[in-house]
Structure formats: structure tokens, C-alpha cells
Image (cartoon, rainbow, N blue to C red; front, top):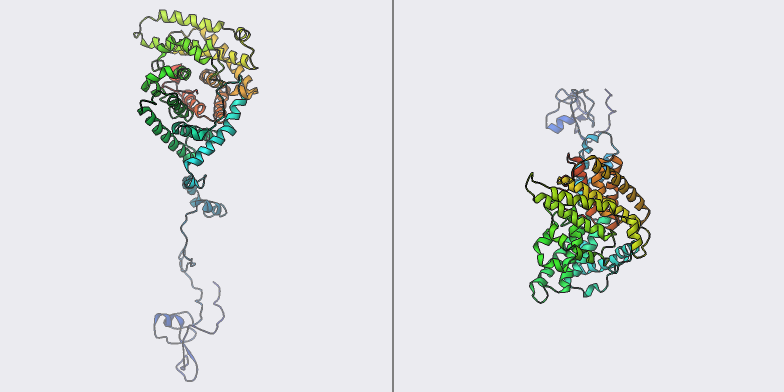
Length: 495
């Protein structure tokens, strides 16, 4: 215990003409604690008998009980702790507050997610979005797809006169532009930084649908080319943003009278049937009956990113029909006729020669032969695996050998396609087939497919590859091994 400080002139003790013993002439001082409490001080020296211990202005040191707090440092009023980021930064400097700071990050993350990454949104109008979308299409989207074509398609054109378009087409294109940009920045649908921008896409989509409904209600414009073009724009914008990926066939089921007028959508429909359960396809039998019409529509080159030989595309339609018919037969009933037809079809696919096809068509750009080989192996694997799923093709050693051979070839072709940006964006459907076969392969195969799908989503600006990735990841984590175990609900994973 330290000694009391030296006595100093008192400013808090009163003086009296009486001395400390009651004598005359000397200054009498009152003990400061007596004065504070309003008591009569006896002014005895060296200490007052009432309230020890002394007359100094500073309270002397005294013994206190262990852990007893006698004074606290005064602190001014604090401001509310609203800035969680600053608190986290300051807390990292002090070691004594680590336990309290450990609870901050989770709450901090929730607060940070509310930060506006596009300041000034409230000052934007629809005209700003329309102008930005037009510039974005012509400077970002169009050049990329135009330069990365195996064969130049007359359908890949820049946007012009967007101000003169019908409102449903104009707002539909704005929706597609925003979804494309968001997919390039971050394919994740739960990305907090894209929420407010994607909200603008939903607003333009709503405006487009409302305007399109007015055109459909009008008998004079209901079946016009412009209205049908608006329907197509809405369909593709929804597929790009995966709004209809889980229930894509709602469009076809609710608008059967439009099917004959939008035949090129049949290509998407048939590929979507491949990634749907065998019993839950859209018009698999009717699609097989109009396969020659689909052949003609596909041949006009509307799908430059689907360099699949048309004969193999027709084989895909044929496989879908067989899958559906197998589910319609009586449980435990004979599948002999379907099995014989399926085996003949698979033999035809396995005998298909990409080299002969390449030599019998017009001069093709480099890469077409590689794509023909890629799609031949993918169609063969799809046929065997999907027909085994409905018990049309047996799980025999011969068919398993066929699958292993074409699985290895398919992965070899897909890796070779990495050498060209144009080929990378042409392997969406074969990549899905490879992803299914990767479960019976090895970890490197699965990693290759999942990594490519994430890259493809950002490269092409569409969400569907990420949707396919999520389907495959669920399949890898499940105990199922068949095609319908993987695609147990309808999915449209190509556009």
C-alpha cells in the first residue's frame, strides 16, 4: 500500500478560527468527509475520530476486500453500434474481446448483404434499362456468339430499332440481357449482390407478359407473327433464367394450338424429354410421327450451338418414344417387340460413321467431325442407359462393355473440345450425358464435368448448366444408378 500524498492547500475543507484542540488563534480545518456528509467534525489531529483517515483533498489508500470494485472510470455516452464492419476491424486488434467478437461475423454477414451494390437504382427508369440492354446485346452477347460458330447462322444478328419493337418483345429482351449479365457475374441464384438487379429483370418480365396478354386477347393480333415472336422471346428468356427449368412442359401443355407454328421449339422439347422421366415426357409419340418435319426445321440452322448430325437427333426422338412405350406396358408384361426395336436402333447408332457423314455433306468448318463423334458417343450412351432404366435393354456384359467404350471416347472428345472456344459451347447436351456416366467412372470424371458446367454457365450467360450441375450432384449423393434415378423429374437443360 502506497503512502498518502503530501498535504496540499485544501479547497474542499472549511476553516474555523478555533484550533484543533479548541485553542484560540489557529485555523481550524474540518475533515473533508465530515463536510461531505454534513457531520460535525471534531477537528482532531492527526485524524478525525468520526471519519478517518485524514484531511487531504485526495482520499488516502485503504485496504479493500478482494475483487471489490470501489471506483469505475467514467465514460461518456456511446453511439449505437450500427457499423458492424468497423467493429469487426477494431475487435481484431484487442485480445481481451475475442470471445465477444466471435459472435459478430454471422450477424455481420447478414448486415453486409443488405449493402446496395448498384447505388442509385431508384433514379433509373425503364428507358435506362432498355438502352443499356440494347448496348449490352450488341457489344457483349452478339460478338461472342457470332465469332464462336462452327457454321455461320443467319439467325445470329444484332439488335436494332429496339425502340420500335412491341413492348412485350422489348421488355423480354431486357429480361434476357439482365439474366445473361447476372449469370456471367455469378451463376448462383442466391447471390445477395444480384438480388436487386434481378428484381428489375422480374419487373420487365411482368411488363412483357402483361403486354403479351393484351395482344393475345385481341383476335386480330392473337396469331400474328409478332405475337408468336413474343411468345418465343418469353419462352427463351424463362429458360435462360431457369424460371421454367423444373416445369418446362407447362408451355407446351397449355398452348397446344401454337405447336405447329413454333416447330423449332420442338428441338428443345425433344432434348428436354431426354432429361425427364420416361413416363413424364411431352408428346413423345407425336414427336416421333412428325420427325421428318423436325428434321426440316432443324436443318435451317437455327441452332448453331447444337452441331448434332440430324440423323442422330432423329434417333434421340426415337429413343424417347421407346422409353415412353415401355412405361405404358402392363407391369411384368412382355417387352419383346420394344426390345427388338430398341436393339435394332442401338445397332444403327453404333454403326453410324461420322466420317461418312462429314464426306457426304457440304464442306464443313474444322471441328464438325469432332462434334459428330462426340454426339454419336453421347447418343449411344443415352440410348443404352435410358433403355436399361425402363428394363428394355438388359444389364448384360456386352452392353456394359459398349457403355465403357463410348464413355471413355466421350470424355476424350470433350477434353479435345477445350482447344476451341467455339467447340466449348457446343457440348451442353453431351456434357449432361457424360455427367450421368461419370458416376460409374471415377472422381476425376465427375470433377471435370461439374467444373465445365460452372464455366459454361458463366461463359454463355445462362443458368441451365448450373441447374444440370445441381441435378448431377444430387444424383452422385444418392443410391440410384439408373437414368430415371438421376432425372426423376422433368428438366429442360438446353436452350
